[in-house]
Image 1: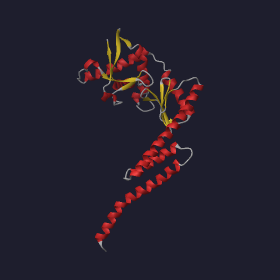
Image 2 (image 1 turned 45 degrees about the horizontal axis):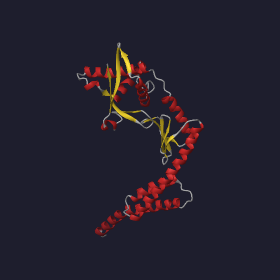
Image 3 (image 1 turned 90 degrees about the vertical axis):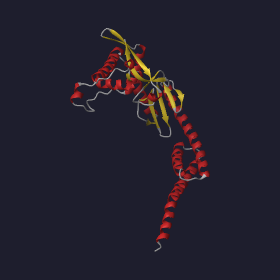
Length: 288
């Protein structure tokens, strides 16, 4: 047995096998793409799946014509997806209008009142948001499902009733509690008494827990206060951000986030002043 010859042949096979697999995958993906491109009515979702396979196969094949074909197919796929998104948005808009509700925006972003719907037509999903906060998980592209989700979130967010003085008093206590903890640890108060807004929110949540939770902490005994609700409450109190503490008026002030803070959900919160407009805030303080 010629070991040197055998080793060379095996090395050649090892080098060619990945190329053969890539060619086989590319050929199969191309056949599917050709079939879809030849249909009278383009199937956008099927084209999207075929495009993913084409791109994966083309990554390891330096074939100019293949890459050109993939780019062209990608452009046609995007056009078909856009058309599908507009058709879905048109039907959804008509459903809202029959209920007397106006829909603004254009796919993939639609606006209904203060809530925003992001449409992922390729993933066949959509998601409701308030500002930057997701109100739902990605839900199926079903008009009835989207309408039902909107009704639930409109009731929970848009129609939310708030006892502003009570909320501000709770927020002030959470803010003051954090300062006291720092004092007990020998830490100085930060400049301007500013504290991180997310940290203060977390403390507020913990302050709301009942003795039952502290006696037996568990998911079932935990009293949740979801972040979108906190965002909504902060928006609602902006019209009257003052609370009386021991007979002394205390005014809530929020500090605008820096770019690095705005890039982190654990360091800042986006407060909407419209469906798509708003500002990131990073710190919170109360001033007498």
